[in-house]
Length: 86
Image (cartoon, rainbow, N blue to C red; front, side):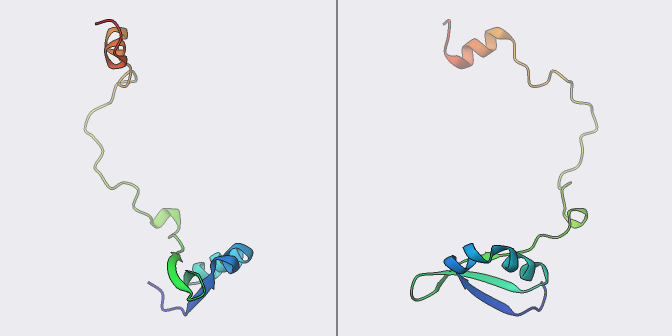
């Protein structure tokens, strides 16, 4: 993670300055949201990596084609799932 500074913001501040806080997170700053008079940390704003760097293909692709009607059930089976007609 980046070595940016840590910024603390109350929920009210986050509501009024969300765009700025997100930009700061994108620059590598750690943004911690707090609640209450004691400013208890409750959440963190974290920038995502650009889409090309994210791991979308976590599982290998199957070595076979999935039929176009794969998720279609016969009417009799649909009725059984609905509890109809027994």
